[in-house]
Length: 131
Image 1: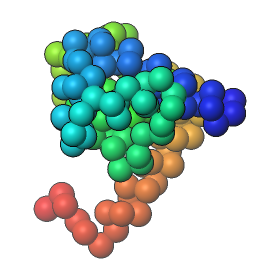
Image 2: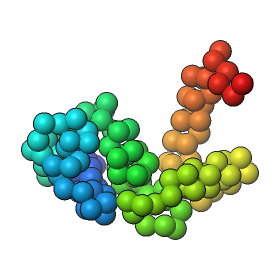
Image 3: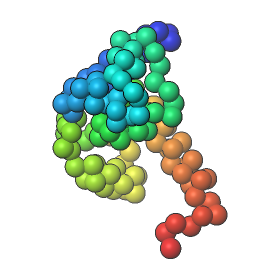
Image 4: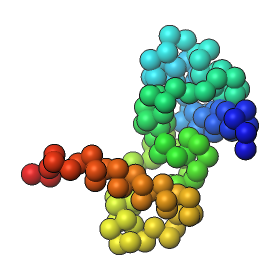
């Protein structure tokens, strides 16, 4: 997939997830700190990239994982829904990880998960937040 195709795929995913949440472009724009909907429109039609610093916030606003924004389906049987119980999803993921059952994810997502997990461990080193 080339850069232009990737932008269009991301835009298509963003639009699908935004609509599933019942949000307008204007509402999403405001939630992400844009002054108007044109930035969201440009991203959705594949004319602009989303800034890296907006990815996590976009996922949070839409109630999905950042991977889902890029087309990776990582929900657990539930469809994307604005009222989805995110705590439940996090608990399922935590149980899956602690039980070593990451086989439900495809290989690229397994690698991403392990990389992310290692990055969290590296970040946590020296800052024990559990006490």
